[in-house]
Image (cartoon, rainbow, N blue to C red; front, side, top):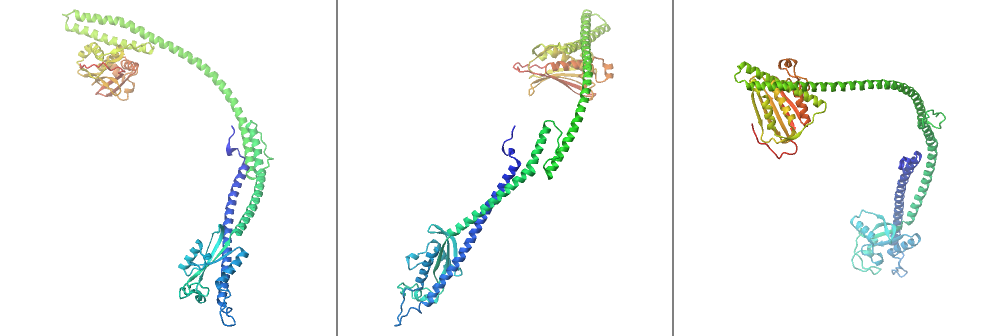
Length: 564
């Protein structure tokens, strides 16, 4: 896939673009700097010229002021003005000078005698400044005049002794020109000389200089770019392309690369040398790897042969194991069935003997009860073995129906009642009022309760206590069957194993109390078949509490409110 954007641009092109950008910014900054410098220089030149011109005009004015009395008396001793008054001469010289140079020279004040000399906005600003500060000797700036750019310069004209004849006191008296005197005193602001210098010529010079500078720098930039482009092509791009071609060969799997004749210097030469060394090392590694792969392939082939042989042996072992397991299950089922039939008959005959002979001696009565009680224990053991065999064979199916746990508890109590009486156990059972009717396998739940009670009876001493209570956990929607005794208890290290088949917490206990070790394992299997669980809380020599949790299901409309 081709990458788009700047990633496709060659390095020399990128470098040229970067250089052009830098030079363009530098050129722009240089143009701005030249323009500002030329403007300041032009402003200084115009200021100097305006200052010199104002001094020349002031000198002409003073000349006329000093000499007009000398030249204005005729032979009869009468005053002959001849129109050579100082103000008229100054204005006339200014007009003549303006025609030859393009400058404008004006004389004005706040209230000029001639309407043509009324000050404009700039001149009013200058008059206000000079009137407020007698030390200010000039005021200038670049602005517009008659719609064009111009340099405006003003200098103050103050009243001297020779000026009092026309402008002094008394105020209102007519002077020699017929104008009322202003009543000024020596040092008062008489007006300003205003000089207007067009900036067009200076602007054209600045533009011409800028164009020359831009042309020169552009030509220099183009020359530098061409030199750098050529140098980049020869010193960088060309050797990099040679490296690229070499990498193309490596990409196709050809690791025999010769870069000794590459046209490169410096870092690129070092890069090409390292690349050549790398390809040589890769070639060595590749050859070595092929040898190792061949050896590993041979080892793998031998390992596969061994694995196939082991797999055949494992399949044969699994087949034998399945046969042995099936044989064990069939054997247990057959033996249990064959034992249960005569054992059921023994229990029936024992019950008949117990009921038929009312005049038996106590010893015979006790023997009969012992036969019946031990036969029932043996029958429960056989039933447990048979049930475990069915579960392991996957033949155990639950018959789901609505179950009232009162019936289950009562059915178990009727079976174990002789054992309870025999050991003088204090027995109690309670069903909480909020326990609902649940869905489950009646025989499976009966087996769970029966095995838990049998286990409690086995390990509870004579005169001990056993409690059974059924509660409802509304938060988890579970019915909890609890069987508690105050028997010998179970060590903490043995508790994780007591629900395994044929396991009891202690071999000495097994010898003392007998039992197959299947009761708790079967209770766990049946609880899990119902989707439930079983756990134990026990302390050595203080008793045990077994709890079975069975889901209450979704239908909880039928509630049973019975205590017993």
